[in-house]
Image (cartoon, rainbow, N blue to C red):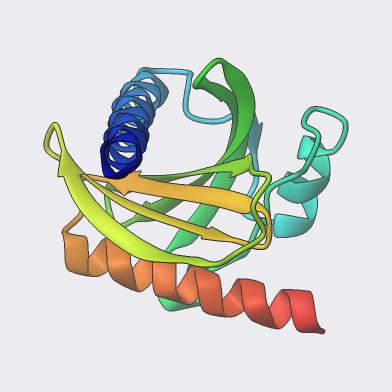
Length: 159
């Protein structure tokens, strides 16, 4: 019985590594000329509705410009064989892609930061959504971004 549990954990880790590798590939594709955004706007009230009808669940779009993370737009991307939303932010000259995918689980999964192929990825889950923020900024700044995003998302959902 214990061996079966171990296999499930190994497979889940392999899935997470494969998805993170796909996240890196999607991030790199987005950095090519003309691929960063499908909708260009610093207005969350323009970006969020753009996703409606294009995805089953539109990702939360939060303006964090006042906190040093400028919203620059959004796009559709494909990771793990399915369409998902990417909300795009800028921190100085660095791009942060926030990939958001619907999940069956509504439980909160605490943030975890990993470095993959020279990029930092902050991954977490909340309210039926999985999030992956990826950038070449330092892990501390990516953590700051994620914390500010999560705090603003909580406020938006409560009020």
